[in-house]
Image 1 (cartoon, rainbow, N blue to C red):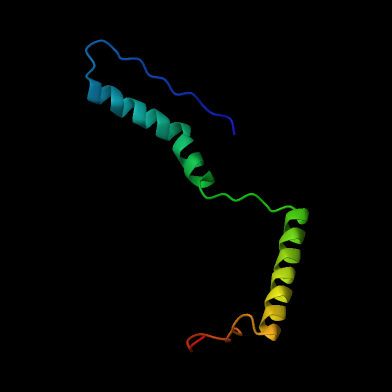
Image 2 (cartoon, rainbow, N blue to C red; image 1 turned 180 degrees about the vertical axis):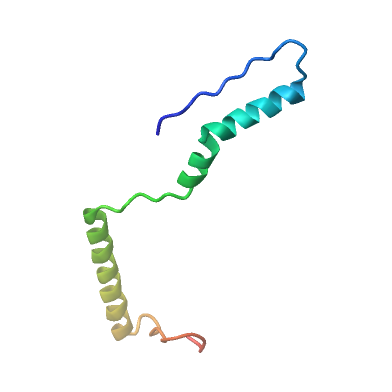
Length: 85
């Protein structure tokens, strides 16, 4: 993302609030704030390798849980909402 520099110089007999207002208008006009807000929650796409590793980890965890349930080391999971475990 390329950044756009916005600069304003104080004119003669210009008050500070006036300078701030002029700066704010210039920033809004440049689109910097809009671009930053649009990128705020942008998520990168996950690579195939990362998806594959995640799936393999889920499968391994599921198998390990089932094995422990069969051996009686942990309580079996209940399906659905509510109910006691």
